[in-house]
Each structure stands twice: as structure tokens, then as C-alpha cells.
Length: 427
Image 1 (spheres, rainbow, N blue to C red):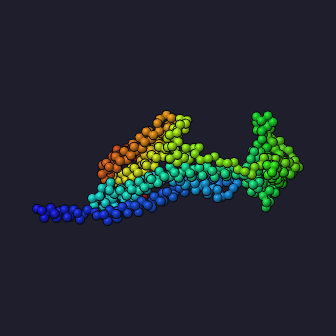
Image 2 (cartoon, rainbow, N blue to C red):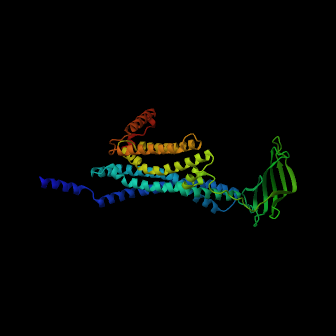
Image 3 (spheres, rainbow, N blue to C red):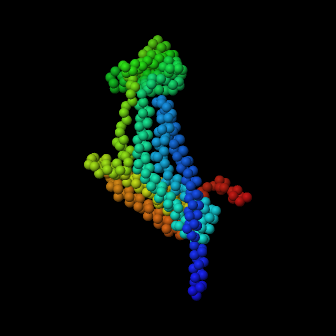
């Protein structure tokens, strides 16, 4: 009896994976995750930055300045957009990995070898812990400085002193309600031809504004920095002021001088920290403990707790993504992807809603936001630990059954001629 028992124990020990097998499995899972995570982050970041770059270049064309300022502003937007993209990219990357492993029967092989779903997800949980720490650092210490740097560069671009030079075919805001453009410009940027000027000036009573459009064959910019004056000298043109009733009168002129104040110094930008979004976690906590206006202290606390909960929530995303991916074994993939997206968006919007209520002093932001984060963690943990395998013991199976019911009802409403042919799927 003892020899037979020892033999069974020896066989079980031989089947049990050793440390090398665990390391091989974890490395394989991390390699599967790395590519979709990097691709997802790159695609989302590129889409967000390109959309913002278009608007920044429009601002550059309007205000003038170097393209380097635009790229500097875009670089300071990276921490902000990375913090937004990281949770979604991480969650959907894990979801895609699990879906792929289920389709290629790799998950069947792992479960057949005696591995539990919880053990398979260990490397994902480890990545979630690391990314949570990265996210807290981004939200708490990198974003405040990058947000302030972005605002400072934008302020410098908008308020930078104009060098009194015109770029051909570009509208220049010279300040004091005057915009200037010329089709042809001399090498020094101040001899102009085919000039167009649009200016808005107050009337004599100062109650209304008068819009005037001016065209001229030639013009010249004369700058007197000592007297802080800019003079635009136009010749051979037409001025068209708009009357109170909306009518326009065209008046020809041989020579016309337009004088404006001119400053070669840009206004100083405000110091960092006037906005709670530009304060680090330490600064928010210390500022909230100081005596001061109640509404400002409420904004500090709301910002502090919201940042911390958002960052730490990444720890629970593997507990959500893995069960959702496994459920696709017996349900269509789109159901798992759609439901995961709805949960993430609803959670993010709920944090924003509670943060807004905290700013308005309707609720105590600390307990409210942390209660929401705890509820999200409990939900993901329940989903994770009560999922036994592929399509087995799925806690949300009734939700997916409802999705199937709705999909069948919608399919019945579609006319037969618009439905895909079965022969197309089964050649």
C-alpha cells in the first residue's frame, strides 16, 4: 500500500508544473499582451494628438510663430492623453489576447493541464499593478507640470510680441481689433502689395463697434518701438465702413495712416497652482488642509481622490477583462467587447460625476469616490473568482442571454433580402 501511494504521489508531482514552467507560461502571456497593448496605445495616442495638432497649427497660422512651439505643446499633451488611453488600451488588449487564445484552443490546453483561470491571469494582474503605479505617477506628478507647460507655451504663442512682419497670404492679428493680410510682401516683411485690412473700433459714444474693411494697392509697416507705436501707411485704396443700419459706403483714398499701440514685451504668465489640475498630489493634500474658502478646499479634495482612484483602478481591469474574454467561448465576441466598453465608460463617467458633485459641495468627495472605486473592485473580483472556465459558471450569463434575445429580435425586423446569405459563409 505504501509503495502504491508513493507511486501516485510521484506521478502527481511529475504532472505539477515546476517554477520553470510557471515562468515560461507567464513570459508567453506577457509576450501576447505586449504587441496589442503597444499598438492600441500608439493608435489612440496618434488619433488624439493629430486632432489636437490640427487645431494648434490653425492657431499658429493665425498668430504667427515657430512650428517648434506647436510640437512643444503637443509633447506636453502626451502625459494627459496617455493617462486617458492607458486603461482602455490595457483592458481591451487583455480581452483580445483571451479571445485569441480561446479561438485557437490554447485556453483549452491550459485548462486541460490543470491550470485555473485565476493562475493563468497572474501575469496580467502583475502588469495591472505596475500600470496602476505608473498611472498614479502620471496623474499625480507628471500631468500637473505638463498641463502648466502647455498653458504657458500657448500663452506665449497667443501673446508673443508681433515682430511687425507679414507673411504673404496670411491673416495677422495686430491687436486692438485689427487683422491684416497682403498677397505680396517684400523681403523684409514690411513692404506690402494688394493689402486687405479688417478692423473693429468703438464708435464715438463707445456703446457700439464699427467694422471697417480696407483694401489698398500698396502699404508699409512703420514701427516706432520707442514711442510704442505701429503705423500702417496705405496708398491708393478703398475704405468701406459699416453704418449703424448695416449699410456700407465705399470711400477712395490716396493715402491713409492707421496707428496702433505696439509692445515688444509679452505679458508674464501666471504662476503654477492657481488651478487644482496643475497641482501635484502632495500640493493638493497640503492645500486642502489649510484654512480657506470651502469651495476651493472641496475642489482640491475631489481632484486628489479622483486621481488616486482612477490610477489604482487599473489593478482590477485584469479581473474584468479575463472573464469577459472567456465568456466569448459560447457567445459572440461583440457582446463581450460591447459590455466591457460600457462598464469602463460608465465607471469613468461616474467618477467624473462624483467629482463634479464634490466640487459643488453636494457630497463629501473622499468617501463617495472611494466607495465607487471599492464597488468597482468588488464587482470585478466577483466576476473573476466566480468564473470557472470558458463559458462555465459565467456570472453575467443572463446579461449575454439578454443580448442574444435582443439580437434575434432585431434580426427578425430586418427584411429577408437584406440578411446575409448562408451560402456566402458556407461555400
